Image 1 (cartoon, protein in one colour):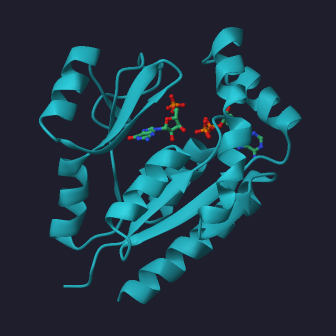
Image 2: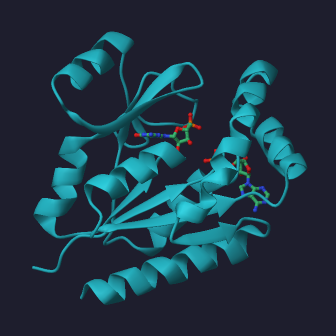
Length: 190
Ligand code: ADP
Ligand code: 5GP
């Protein structure tokens, strides 16, 4: 059976990563999506078990203790983590899997699965545009937008550790570029 590829997409919050991941999954129905666990509140259009597993802090801490997470991070006051059961689902099926995780989570997945992992960094065209996108999305308070922006310099510093970097200026162009990368990864896998 051909080996799974773990395609990890990371970006500063508001760069357009979720938008690009959703489109990539539509274009590649053969690829699985790793549903992370999080303690942050569900946004209006999100679905439990599809976008995230929304769990309490107590449940999350239990999962850490039971070694159910491949990696986890505390971000913006909440916990986010990749479930071992999700990675195993990909490895067992031989299918590739897309991950939407923060930069540290991405590097941690690569450290554990160096042969399988492909890292894609999505970059905003500028801090101004990033701020506008977060405001326009309307899911965050001004305070949480500020917290998300504070992390951006650290995130941009890690860009060089990624295999690919895609600037999300025009959405169609960025999505096509990610699509090309995924297409090539899938071709190599065969
Ligand atoms: P992330 O998952 O990286 O936090 P989202 O995918 O939620 O980011 O995108 C943040 C906001 O920016 C959303 O409202 C989305 O519709 C918008 N957006 C994404 N890409 C672009 C783009 N290229 N041009 C303009 N708006 C964009
Ligand atoms: P959001 O709250 O906007 O959905 O996500 C906030 C940040 O958490 C994003 O950078 C997203 O990629 C990251 N994230 C989501 N799931 C995981 C995960 O399982 N592990 C890590 N490390 N980060 C995650």
